[in-house]
Image 1 (tube, rainbow, N blue to C red):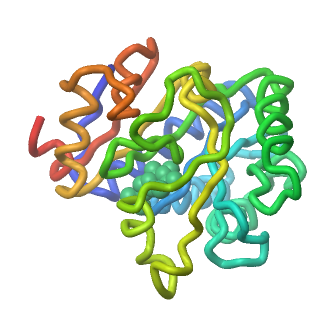
Image 2 (image 1 turned 90 degrees about the vertical axis):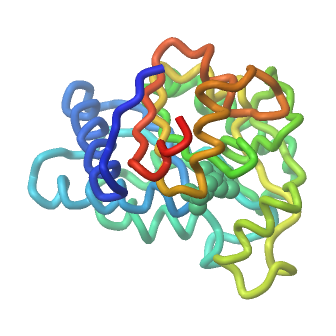
Length: 241
Ligand code: GLP
């Protein structure tokens, strides 16, 4: 794993954006794997800026998001669909038919998981996957204990994850109990992974990810086995390394 030392959140976001821009300029029909949460918000701002400055076009890009809550429809402002459209897709020239998220509101959720996994493969797999990390080591919504062999699947969210994400909702009761997420196996098939980490509250998780044992109890630890992972971490996040 290669660690890029950013000074702060802004620099982390700029460095990640320049990797995306470089990738898309090298291969205009790149397949990007995208993430939500507060960590990549700065990255998306920088990407929008690069697009507005005329430095990149997403016309031929396909994207797949990692995950989506179960039971929130597209208009719900807490859905990841809403997040991605408001924070990125509506501001760049990506074809919205090619900007994919799992449908957490599907009638048959298992069928939706199968469809999503197949769609990723049919697109040729993910060239660059952006990841954040949860405090308990989750990537996407793969909670501790998830089998490394899983592909896109339905998960019961950990109570700690629901609490961590409750800050975006009116109350903890509003946080969905389940989500659809790409599995660890789906994520590991990406050709390249860029993991963003910012802030001292993530320092312990980053240390475990880099130096801890590879175990399903800490899902992000599997990244030690991937041959092309870049971690972009700011100073505070690196404080326990
Ligand atoms: C969420 C998302 C993850 C994200 C994580 C950390 O639960 N499903 O993809 O990486 O939380 O979020 P944040 O960046 O807000 O700390």
